[in-house]
Image (cartoon, rainbow, N blue to C red):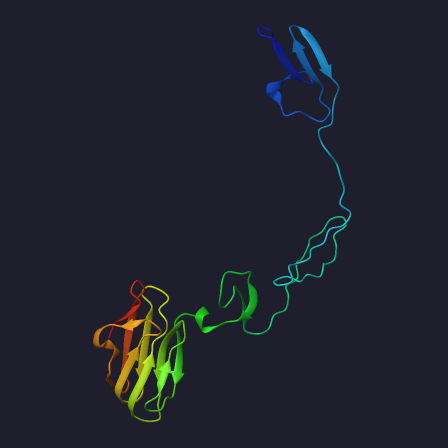
Length: 210
């Protein structure tokens, strides 16, 4: 286009402001009063799908294709059957990976309680994610040692309670975790009493709560 030339574009006798174009519209360009016409052109395409079906990933949904839809209809994904007490989750350990159905582990459920019947002089060790020990010995204990769970989060809480007197009870941190001050014992843990700690992640230490 040269300077000073005037162009006006019409689509099927309509100014361009009336777009969008229709498939059968005629395109006309007026240049300095001279009209150039472009025959109607179809801008739409057409195609057909004769059959479509759904096949799942084999984990959540069945990877066996369902009944195909050939005209109109609805696709219905079919869930895979799973073993009892399994959940869809990432790996229990290690790095990130695609989820699968698996049994839950103690780490999956932070704060679960474990009931124990220890003998005097023994050591009870909390699992990762565990929230409490309920100690139910056959009788009073002279000595009992406990290892707290690994510290994995700020403010993590652990509790212990007993149904029998424990004369000398002590608690230690797991690995390099520590227990602050005298809260690690040994101390008397009275029948129907208990003790609790809260974790500080920045220095991986357990602090007494009560």
